[in-house]
Length: 276
Image: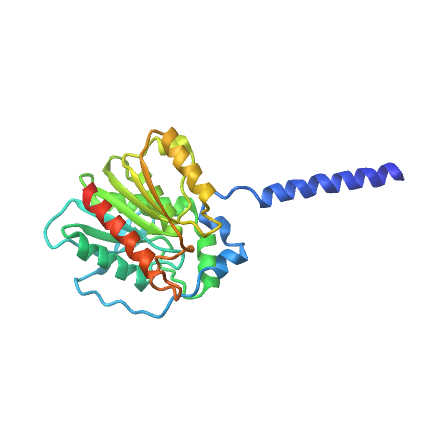
């Protein structure tokens, strides 16, 4: 009887440890955070905004290699240009705030085509619950296919840079990897970076990382690991850690940090102007 009790206790402890290791495993993408109540609550629901393009922005569709179609918000350069900026959404989806930010980059960069890519296949969240659901449902195979479809759409001679925030920050880096020799630059705002050195070795451009030192998810430790892995891969990354919270650069956030956001945008704009 005693042996049975001891065996049962030992078995329970082993299972408890295994479950703890599984639950606490290091996340490799932001979708892993959707079960974290604090992460969800850190995203205050976006302020209402309806975007009206002043420069002819429009939604377009393109084929994706998985036999489906993707879509994006396109702002075409006034004069023919091989320069492209891919813009990647926060976890809310391709909402009007992202369209506005895409148009801001378009106006400030000049002769650059800007494409804000929809990674949720038309789904846009206005509540934290929906945003959490959509990001949790996103599959790497599908988002990579959408990005590849956009790369194919802009053509073999395109020079592509990318920028994204939160969920889109990580996607901006994945985009640079998928773009191959067409990649000229990558800006990622507080997104989960790719950490595999072998994958980072295939990058054809450097990276500008904008991070928030007060957040616990894309933490300083995560950023330091990314810097170390980029160095091992022989690639250049420039990191700026702002004394701010996650999503500090999101103007739809009622707790928007304008000072930090303006500084980060100036850094991003100067970087993008140099890479083309």
